[in-house]
Structure formats: C-alpha cells, structure tokens
Image (cartoon, rainbow, N blue to C red; front, side, top):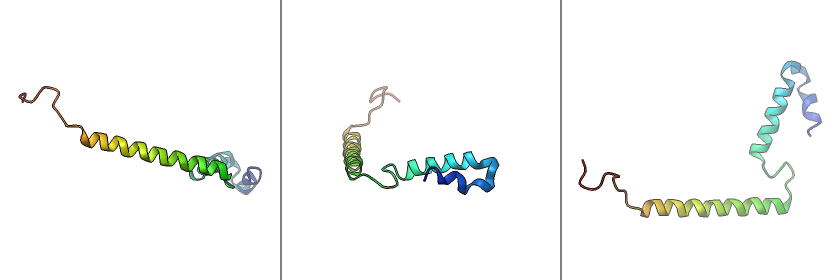
Length: 77
C-alpha cells in the first residue's frame, strides 16, 4: 500500500509528496489499529478506550460533587 500510493498521485507531480503525507496521516488518525488489525493490538486499544472512559466519568463525577466557592470568600462582593 505504501509503495502504490505515490504512483496513484503521479499526475499531480508537484503535490505528490504532500498528498502522500496527507493520506498517511489520515490512515493513522482514522485507523490507529492499522489497515489489517492484529487481534491482540485491537484488544489493547479497546481496553485503553474503556479505561479512559472510566477515568473521564470519575473526573466528571468529582467535578459535579465539588462545591463551587468564590476565591474571595462567601461575604465578598
């Protein structure tokens, strides 16, 4: 795939490397597990997503539970 992509953009000789880089970046962003994902790596990414979601939920719950106070005190204003 990496060898064939520059050939596809041969008619855009001036922008070929720019387009090649954009395609590579798009693949990395849209398919972090790769074009043909490894089962083990897919499980690792899924576990990481679950852990991040759990952490984000805990942070949100902590923020909602914390009272909002003025740095100047209650009687200031």
